[in-house]
Amino acid sequence: GQIAAFGDRLAGMLETIRECRPTLPIVLVTPLAHHFDGPAEYDPPLMPQVREQMRQVWQRAQADGDQRLFLIEGHDLLPRLDYGFLADGVHLNDLGAHRIALNLAPRLDAIIRHCWPTLPRPSVSGEISR
Image 1 (cartoon, rainbow, N blue to C red):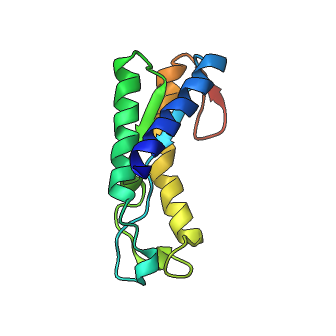
Image 2 (cartoon, rainbow, N blue to C red):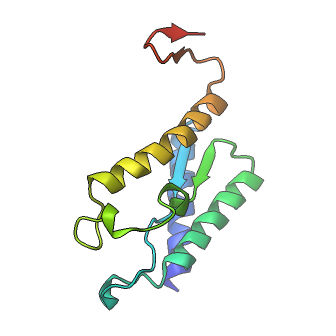
């Protein structure tokens, strides 16, 4: 169905990117949508299947040797959907975006360190260290 087609399209898109940029790090982030008590039209019943398709695409790529494709679980970036993070009960507000940024930054830093271990790092003071 539609979910399987999503996985096929995602895999095809990643294959196209890899043909052009074989060493480019690519980060997949699963959807952040959570189930919450809200209007039925905002209930994302297919999100668990979308997340699973993304995991399967990532696992196949890893098995095929793509060590520069990374998967981050969206729920890890905003583990608990709290209305304090939402502008209108559905969309993130500045606080929600800030919380995601705080949780995403160390994961992206780890990916950068994995891909470029000798890259100089800025220190807390802003100076470059090696």
